[in-house]
Image (cartoon, rainbow, N blue to C red; front, side):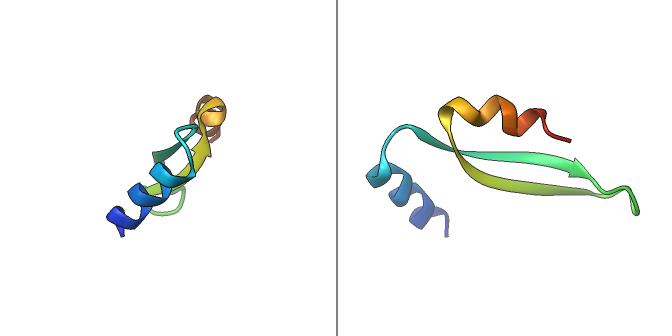
Length: 50
């Protein structure tokens, strides 16, 4: 899976990046990971969301 994502990012352009954010579940308190491929200019907005 990771190889396919990397190949897609390289062919699509250098203006996109894969962002992984850790989010705490309000019910259980466990941490989960949210992954997204976003434009370089929107990385700070994605990380700032709660």
